Length: 369
Image (tube, rainbow, N blue to C red; front, top):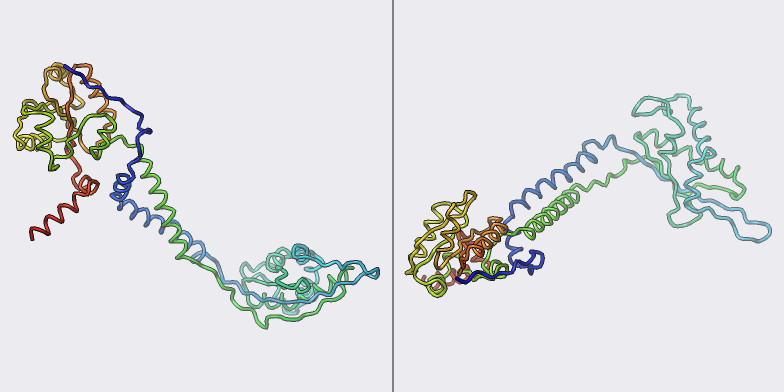
C-alpha cells in the first residue's frame, strides 16, 4: 500500500492569508468593544479624576508688561540684552523677590501675607512658584505672570512687582531703567485646559490597537485549519471542503470511491453522525468510523493498516496542528494512505464568507423569489 508523502514546512514559511486573518480579527468584534470601554474608563476616567475631580482650587492670574532700557556702552560696543532664560532666572532671584516680600510684610493688616490654602506664612519659595517671566515678542518687554489660589493674593503680588524690577535696575549694571507699560486691573480665574474627550479617544485607540496586535499575534501563531486551502498547502492532501460544499458528492466519488473509512479527529458523536449521513447522501458508504482522541485504541494501527479509502475529518479551528502532524505520521508508519480530508465540523459562516459563497447563496435566493 502506498504511504503518504507530505512535507511539514515550518508554519512561519506559510504565506500569510490576509483575507482569513482579517475575517478572524473581525469575528472578535466583541473584544474591541470591551477594550474600547476599558480604554475610555481607564484613560478618560483617570484623566477626569486627575484634572477635574481632584484638580484642587481654581487659580487666579494677572499679567504685567515691563519695558526694560539697557545701558549703551560708552565705547560703542554692542548692547548687552538679556534673553528669556536670563530673565527667568533673575525673576527667581532674591534681588527681585526680596523687595516684594518686604513690601508685603509691611502691610498693616497682614491678611495678604497668608497662605489662603494652609493658613501658614508664605515663603520666598511660594513667590518663586507663583511668579514667572518670559519674553513674548519684543526682547525689551518682559511679561510677568502671577498665578496663585487667591484673587487678593495675586493682585497684591502683582502690585509689588515694580519694586522688584527697580531693585534689579539698581543692582544690575546692564540695566538703565524699567517702566510699566501694561498691567491687569484685576486677577481673573485661569482657564483650565481640560480635554476629557481627547483622553477618552486616546484610551479607546490605544486599547483597541493593543487588542488588535494581540489578536493578530494569536491568529498568526495559531496552527488550526479554518479553510481547505490551508490544509492543502500545509500537508499536500486534497480536502473536500466542508460538508455543505456543492462539489462534495462529486469529489467524494472521484477521490474515495464507494466505500470509505473515516478517521475522525475530534468533535461530538453528533458531529460524527452528521458526517456519516452527509457521506451516505453522496451515494458512498462509511464502512468504518475511527475516532482519534486522547484515549487511543490499541488496535488503531491495525485498523489504519486495513482501512481502505481513508478520509481524514479535521475540525475547524481546533488548535490541533501538531495533532494532525502526529496522526499523519502514524498513518505513514502504519502503511495507511489518506486519500482526502474533509473540514468537519466546519465553521460554515466563516467558510462561506472566505469563499464568497454567501453572496452566491443570497443571489440564488433572490432569483427564487
